[in-house]
Length: 123
Image (cartoon, rainbow, N blue to C red; front, side, top):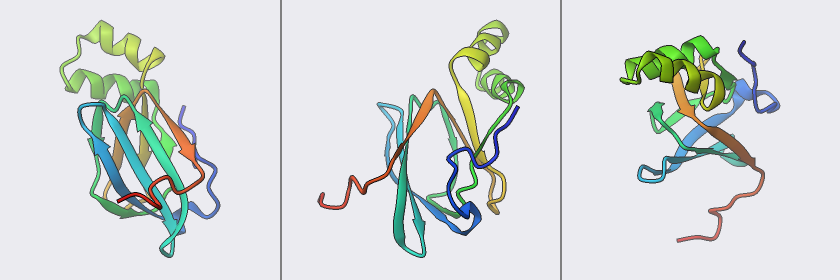
């Protein structure tokens, strides 16, 4: 069962997303969500197994995919069927933005919302 507006953001279709950091070796992804250029929140995904997204897109209306979608994606990535079935129910979630002009998919173990601009004073 999917959950619409997973992060419970106000007017998610009016927000924009940008990939600020992606640490491939650690499987971490940091997405900056803004409203007309003003910071709203960071979404920190961890143990990212799959990412299909441009660097910037319109809409932060994230929803989660059904475990059958996770299982199919894991199988398409080469996981054995039993492992894909078990991992789709116990470990990974598929986060999607279907209202974006380009479908966004992020398969990860989890995500946390960070309500302050952690990169504001970094160089």
